[in-house]
Every structure is written in structure tokens, then in C-alpha cells.
Image (cartoon, rainbow, N blue to C red):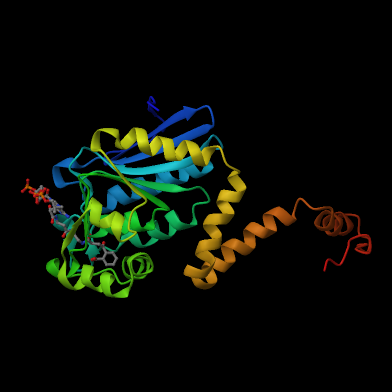
Length: 279
Ligand code: S0N
């Protein structure tokens, strides 16, 4: 399916593009890291902008699925921009103290109650590889290459960069990623369960849109619960909290919950006897 993308924000993004398209089944948002001169490496500003765009997509009732990608055929993302890496983390322009802005962003991607799809052409390397791990699905072009470089550049991501990778490819292989810093091509990535499919580069967007359209045709709340169900286990108490609050959202619509609310407002005792004690 060929689509037309429309810029969808008033924000003055410098490092990303935020666009939207409408399909008969619903809207798709696309966030493109737009720093091809550094293989779409992210600096703090890049991640601040991605985070803002994710929030826009979350709040947009028309949007059902979000695509995260990189500009051009050469890279999805090559991780943290080593030019702004200081002794205190990655340092925003004009500041002296840095941090890992990607820490909160990874959580935001997993928390987001809509599917996030990585559309990967070229390199997904370092922190860029971890970003694809944090996406719910990954559609890879046949020129995609995956890997971690941390120990080569004096770092590592032992958070989702280790745990999600291990869940996907197994402990030995995940350790191989990190201990040897090798790169793996798209076919190898598919073989080890790291990506959902591999498609010709020239059909990458079309195929990705197709996957998104399939999800858009499904129940949005069921998709939300599928995502939070997986994370309930993977993210510990924080994952359980999200699934639990999703259950609250559904329960709010029940007559049983409404009885509690209405009784409180009417300053009367709630009458829950009308509701079954389900087996
Ligand atoms: C991506 C690679 C393999 C592409 O190789 P290719 O195609 O040969 O292109 P190059 O000629 O190498 O690159 C083109 C230009 O782009 C610049 N560039 C590429 N990547 C970066 C980058 N990450 N930072 C800055 N510049 C980059 C090149 O320098 C080149 O510029 P010019 O034209 O001027 O020479 C290859 O480029 C490559 O291997 N890149 C480096 C990959 C890397 O090591 N990334 C950093 C890994 N670390 C992180 O991502 C940090 C993650 C993080 O934030 C974190 C978070 C939580 C906890 C821990 C961490 C942590 O620190 O790990």
C-alpha cells in the first residue's frame, strides 16, 4: 500500500520528522530520525524530540500504530552520538552535565499503549539496536545489519539491551552480541528471532505499512492489552502496574464500578448485592 505522509506537528523539530498518514483502517504515525550524516546517531536533542513525537502519537486518537525509522537506506540508527558523549553522559547543546536521555525513552516506548514498529534499513547498531529491541515489531530491509558496539567504544547497555536481547535470541547468543561486538545481517537476524520479517529494501515502507494496516484492523484495546500483558512479566512491578491499570480502565465502564462511584457521590451506602460473585 503506497501512502502519503503529512507533517503532523507544529514543533520545530531539528533532528527528526514527525508525519502521519491516514488509511481506511486508521492513522499511522511515522517518526524518522533525520541525521543521516552520522548514520542517524542520536544526541540528547534527538531523543527529546522522539519522546515528544511519541507523546503526540499517543494523544492522537486517530493514530493506532507508530513507526520508528531512520532517514535513508544506510541506517536505522547508530546509537549515541559519540561526538557529544562526555564524562557525565550525553551532553545537550549549551549544557555541561549530561545523562542518558535514552533511559526514559526506552520505557516510554514500552509504556506506549499503541504498537511501535521499527522499520529498519541499514544499520541498527549500539543504542540504535536497543531502540529496535524496545519496539514491538521489527520489519527489516534485506540490507539491515544489527549489532552492539558498547565494549568497542567503552560502554554497554545492561538494561533492555541485555534482557530483551536475551529473551529474543537466548543467553549465549546475546552474550556473543555484547562480548564480540559482531554484526549480523538481516537473514541471520530473522533466523535468530530478532526481527519479524525481512523484505527487499525498495519495498520496506510498503511492507511495513501492510503490517500496520493489519494491526489497525484489530481491536485497539485488545492490542493495548496484548502489549501490556507481555510487559507485565518482563517489566516486573512496573509491567504489572500497567496491566492492572488497563484492567481498571475496563472496570470503570462496568455497572459494578459505577455503583461505587454513584453511591459515593450520593452519600449513600453502595449496594453491590446486585452483582454476581463470579466463579
Ligand atoms: C554504524 C556504522 C557501522 C556505519 O558504518 P559506515 O556505513 O561505514 O559509516 P561510517 O563511515 O562509519 O559513518 C558515517 C559517518 O557517521 C558517523 N557516525 C556513525 N555513527 C556515529 C555515532 N554513533 N556517533 C557519531 N558519529 C557517528 C561517522 O563518524 C562518519 O562520520 P564522518 O563522515 O564525519 O567520518 C559505523 O558508523 C559505526 O560503527 N558507528 C558507531 C556505532 C557506535 O559505536 N555507536 C555508539 C554505541 N553506544 C551507544 O549507542 C550508547 C548507548 C547509550 O546511550 C547507553 C544507554 C544506556 C546505558 C548505556 C549506554 C551506553 O553507553 O552504551
